[in-house]
Image (tube, rainbow, N blue to C red; front, side, top):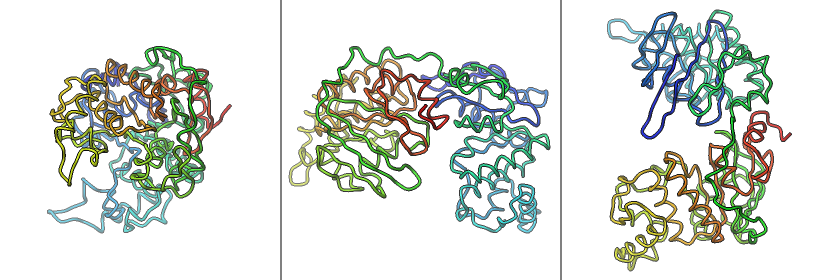
Amino acid sequence: MRGIVKRFPGVRALDGVDLDVRPGEVHCLLGQNGAGKSTLIKTLSGAHQPDAGEIVWRGEAVALPSPVSALRHGIATMYQELDLVPGLSVAENVFLGHERSRHGFLRRAAARAETAALLDRLGHTEISPDDEVGDLSAAGQQLVSMARALAHDARLLVADEPTAALAADEVDNLFRILGGLTERGVAVVYISHRLEEIRRIGDRVTVLKDGRTVATGLDAEEHTTSELVDMMAGRTVRTAFRETERDPAGHGDVLLEVSGLGRRGEFDDVSFGVRAGEIVGLAGLMGSGRSEILETVFGARRPDHGTVSVAGTRLRPGSVASAVGAGVGLAPEERKSQALLLDMSVADNVTLASLPAYSRFGFSLSGAETTVAASTLEHLDLRPADPHRQSRTLSGGNQQKVVLARWLVRGCRVLLLDEPTRGVDAGARAELYRLIHGLAADGVAVVVVSSEIPEVLGLADRVLVLREGRVLAERPADTTSEADVLDMVMEGSTA
């Protein structure tokens, strides 16, 4: 891949990326969240079309207009979120989209026989071609995905976080299988946030940051973990997050207290407190349990153990009503699908969490709704500040302001922010940072999650570092660097 450029509205996701992969090697692709890894592999797999640059496959420039085209060339991708159909059998999944048929009739016996041969090649004859995929373990489903790639006679296999849901012994088996593939000349592009895996399986490394190639073709054995982390982190930018330094001594009493919170398979034994006027950041990679913790605190998920208290009052587990009643608000990661009613007005969305205060005998008091919405939106500098405007027509930054306005109107004391600036341009980001610090200055306890580590460190007073559902460390944000956080989440160590 040479000089690959990919633009999305308002974002240059890839800015001249280079990547070359040799037959029989495991080429590791590194970069923190937002570096461009997913966009790059989707371009390689035909799901995205580059705006500039070229893809050269086996010595010839090629166009890959679709995933089917990439598969026909021998490029197969195993995504982190496996694209299998749970209700179909193993054989049906392996040949989904390129079914074995003759004269319009499916050749089920042939598909089962070929699937059995592929599973034997992968060393897993205990999985039957007739097993339903939904009944298999995560490791079993990973093998089915790999068998599907081999069914296309793949010469290049892209594996995106393939060990994310695997136990240690299953990881060992996966590495054995990948080793067997490379011995046959199959090339592997391997994406992982776990640097210890890069040491075990990688031959060469390419590092991305902010959509650019920082380094490519590095020998995996010749570069230390700290060197790779430094390349991924680059220069830490802390300006633009806060206009003035905030004094931790000015924080009030503990408002939010989370004790021993756990939810099976997602996170375990999470404890922290947030004082009035304090901003606490949760830093970690995707899959570390960040969003799940916020949703459990908010009552959208029921914990298996542990407690959540606000101002000393314990909340009812798994109850959004209990959390909202105690003054907890959540701005979720996916605001369009999880927070906003896009076809309703801005005023309707702003008062959604406070309907009893703006209704009488079951009927909405539209005038009161409009008045309070207009006042709050003016305070948040919404543009245009039209409470009657359809929410769908607003920009990403203004939609996020509507979500914040909802909790301001509600008078929340604890605000949970999940990826508050995702899809927001630079100017709107600065406004949101100002608003978040303004809320904290007014005594709101804020918990913020962001995939961008500099953002967490820049916004927060304190940061909790998460890895695989556990809190590794709790640090003051102003004495913690981006490289420090990356070191911890990559290596699983607080050192």
